[in-house]
Image 1 (cartoon, rainbow, N blue to C red):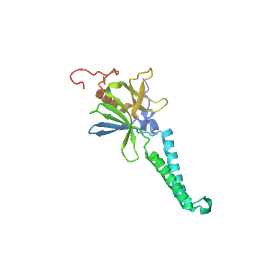
Image 2 (image 1 turned 45 degrees about the horizontal axis):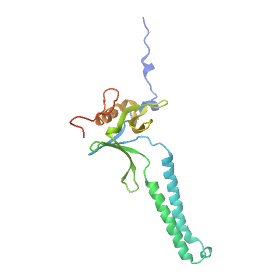
Image 3 (image 1 turned 90 degrees about the horizontal axis):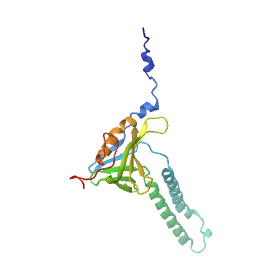
Image 4 (image 1 turned 30 degrees about the vertical axis):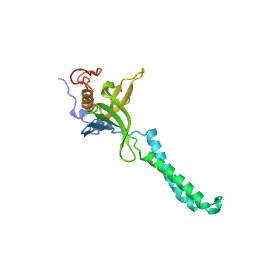
Length: 212
């Protein structure tokens, strides 16, 4: 007679973070020209720190532009009103420049324009309009694959590799999410770029009657 393991041994009554990660879907937004992929995770990088620094400098310069009028007139040589006005304009101008830099987004979104046949890396501009950082044609796609995390966890990325003139190919992260849920996104990208989406990826084929 063989003893069967107790069913309770297979019940995890304390779900951990890895199980929650399995349910994270890539953030895909549909548009009339294609679709856009926004990362789920925001990494604290140099761009985010620079935005915070620009915001701090903006507030400091604006306060200096106002506070300079509290300085006694005897502190200035010549006409105090003219000196204060010029200093105020300079501080306000620098404050405006830093305000535009602080308002610029740091989260890079990837737009897949199926009508134009290109990838676009964009960020939010200070006026709400997208700022295009880079463009890549579908014909430059070398490989599309899903990359898992270096350590423990179930969050991965879909990475697109583009052809490069040098030895090192250029690679961008298109979307992130649970490893089990990134397969359909990778297949869709491969299909749009003319790659084999059922097996290992291959080079794009751009010939025949449908070639642009």
